[in-house]
Image (cartoon, rainbow, N blue to C red; front, side):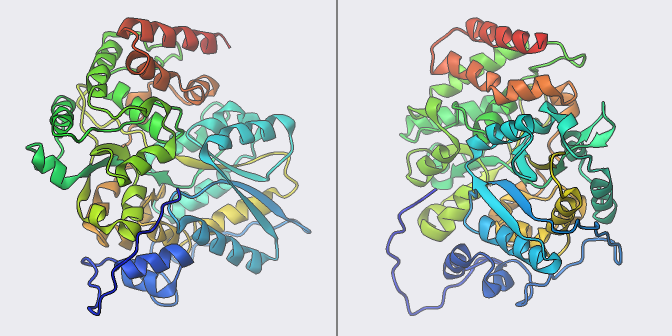
Length: 466
């Protein structure tokens, strides 16, 4: 997301960083240079040489895959949302390439284009050796992917194990293999303007949905509308709408794989969404992933759901907004438990590759200590580790406003909320934005809750028939 940078007033006074954090000048340097040694050392608890200040993995435990002669790799990867992401990943890639002599080309692609590009590669049998995509997309074509059991088991044993939700995304129960590697989680929280909450009579974000809706109404009455994505946004659209459905006790599928969206809980979720929609700024029905960021930073909205990328940019370019914003964990709905659904990027290796060992070793290297932890730190926690040993990297203590993102993977319960195991049908429903469209039809489209539900049910029934 491009933003015009306002002129900064020069001061003879030394900038004072927040406790354990970066000054604005250091953050600007980090955004421009990715892994500037001084920025990392000052803000993220790393030494000037970039060595990790903490130890994470089992000492002495190592694995290297025998790389094929003449190997080269093409990697399809999502484009960055925070400016230190790509430079950090490129540095890690360059280090592996120099170590192994294997050239690597990384193609960065906008998020909405990733699923279609990976699908084409899988069906044509040609393209990138490694592809990163989102959620359970690999379950659309599991038989076309290289099993990753050895790599996944090594990383799990060395780094404290995978979170349960990560195993759900990577392990195919039917095949009995890991088919994808969860490489990070784009945690999501409530992003809000502190002073505007106070103006509306609230000190903090309510912890339950009924009072959350009341808060949003109070904000709108004070001239501070909200903004939640009801468009086909890979991250924000699915994050928000699935969370809302599950929080009310609704589900898309039953445990046996049949369509389960028709319920009183789903109708309740739709009616409450219609009520929340009255607090929103116009245009949310066409929002893609950058749009809630832009509207929050422009002062158009008071509250949204997003990763820490808004705050990351605000710290660099809009310090007044950065000082006046904070984050809160998602409110709990009638179901009574956390139902968060943050974006989960996963990496997979196609069977058509000539260099599966090189591909595995590259992914291993990216997630090893000294690389993976630096990536999380450099992005201010925009990505959370999918391996438990990295849960306490220094970034979480560098700024208290990052803290709500730290335990997002602990709060993400697949089995209860998703109801069925991953597979082609749930993946297809997600890819076709059926849940997002259901809520959009009832709000932006003006349909009744029952008509919006019936439309979603019909679309799911077509997927269920195969």
